[in-house]
Image (cartoon, rainbow, N blue to C red; front, side, top):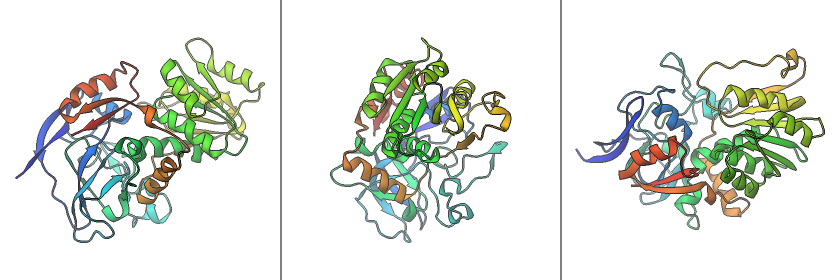
Length: 357
């Protein structure tokens, strides 16, 4: 049986490069030869043992590659075609899909709690930090990459861009809105870009890393607040003349950023939560107006499927945003353990790493 290299979860604190059999595919699947992938913050949660997965699982959910082999029932694609697939891989046939909630296809109990919807790569099946990847329900999930776009230009589409944009979409941003984004990591930066495209005319970013705040300004942030120097909620209220923001996007997954998002909202505003939380949350009574302030809390899991990927690549092709600055480091798959060490410790101004087998 032919083998491939893959980044494998061994135990909390250890993701290592190992050899595994090249995946077998079924009639509905496609085998994709990975040409570029990356590491996500959720992968770091896995590394730290904060999100449990099975030992021996290949990690990663952001694939760019070339179709190596197609299942007999897959239509509309050809071997040798450049493609991406979303981090979320809906079948298109489930109750969740037919209700219009593609990201929740496959939601069920796993390790004692609800698994993250339709997130399968690197969660319930082998993922993309490998030389080859089996894409399930390939007809619904493969999206052809336009010839004019490079791997790195579309690398953010499978997860980071889709998730960040969904934060703006779920927040129902309107033309003229004021929006704050808490945490300017890759998802938060994409949320800034999504807020601008959605019509927000005042965008505030909250972080403490100068390089991230500079990138945020380039993507559309009008103000950047260093939360280590000022109280971010007080500064937001000053910038909005005490009104508060229309939409707060929480892109980190901590109690503090969740609570500050609520505190920064005007009455009737929307907290759009994108963070992956590692413990129970508490809703501050005052910030929530004791339930009488008409504030909404919405959560969103990264939308997937081929049409979502097509739309995101269309945004990139249009030139309306440029996410190339998010790729700050590059590694070979052979050096995946060093890439994890850099990314998990957030050294050297890292935002995203591009990994090539």
